[in-house]
Image (cartoon, rainbow, N blue to C red; front, side, top):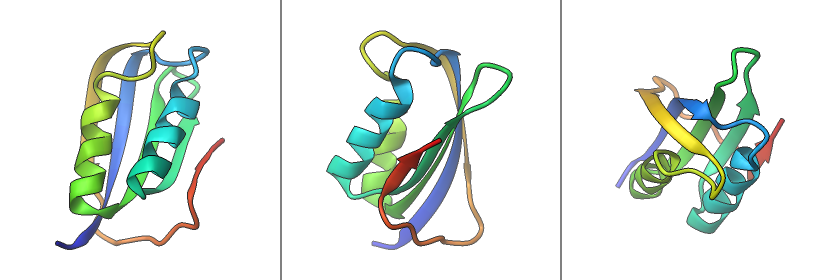
Length: 91
């Protein structure tokens, strides 16, 4: 199975509810590299790279989110170029 990268934009109550930290935990557990960051408009942007099955599992998790988040919508696009990351960070 190929390595892929996907970018997700997560909408809802996803800032101030430990969404990025929970995403980081899930990504590390799955062996996915990349990052998650808050956007000024209240969304969280996530770049996830790794084995397709692991990235798909993290993408599925984004629809649920952290215990105190309320995800309303997740928009995901495939990235044309694969990027290598040393772990998963939040910023």
